[in-house]
Length: 483
Image (cartoon, rainbow, N blue to C red; front, side):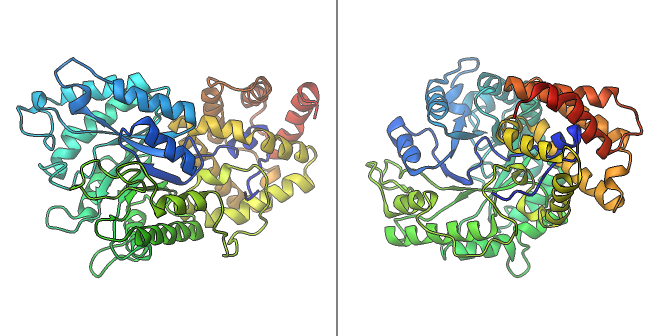
């Protein structure tokens, strides 16, 4: 792990310890639907930490007001007991809600859809923090009416319900298929959705398959095609370059390709993702072949549960059996427990490394008490990461504070440590601390954060980072900590 973010003071230190883009830091996921426990055990065996599951409105509320969550309960409980993180997809309309038009049409009354989302999120709000609204809405088989209806009758009601039931939840989307057919063009849908409701999207997600292999998946992500933009470029143009980006479906079908070819494409994709540290997460499609032999066989397990070569490749890659021969692009790498880098998407990190390393160097080498805060940072990084992983408000607050810190350093070049901290920055930190203190914390960490929160209220306006380090070290460190 790269040790590159340190804090400059009691509350500035807190601003820089936030981290995370998922409950698990692992970038490795798989689509599992609502697989049986034996199949889910194979994901655990492979070291896969993320599963994407379906919460199908049709089966969970077959008649209005009659909820059946037993199968979802089973998968969610299995995940909790085995350390699997969940991305849950809410989708597909039951006949009673739209007059039998089919699952690819919205409810006649959006209040029925909103109520289902509310009931579901409230039920799982302690166990599921990442939600997707529908699946591939630009594909008529999944959603027929078009993007304007999708945004107004599906996305907006669902997003409002999610935020109301769990303000700290992460909304992941829009999970578009990478299609270019007329009226289904992924880039037109993506632009429309991000312009219309982008403020409600915490993590941008996309689906991309290419029969030619993993290299071509990345070419479509990064280079595009003639007259069709790259996914990465379009996100940048729309102002979403700094959002986390997840590839929530990609894969190869072993009815079309040999199992060995599927395994080779997995390895190529995994190696390319590692060399870029992008996308932030990849969910392969899928964990197990459909039990119907006429359905395409995308799984890394056959329909009888036996392992395909791609299963072994995925497992071995996660376990480190395929070493990384590429030089690390970021210098000063060491094995410290630093998770703050994971808060900022890879596409936005390059401009942060140098100033944050300079902040670290100055803190440790030139500030009395700086070594104490460096040690405290690494001592509590994992705990602070955990609470940011589970609450989108802490996550976004951390992004803003880190970015603001870098801007302050640039504006106060050479005078950062002796320049007063802006009042609005202090208020941002206080707000983050106030929310963090509501979370389950180690008692010692709680004392540390409470002490920092008090400083934001009590210290005078003309306070510099240097004064805060000294003051907080004097008031807190020698009184409460023994290491």
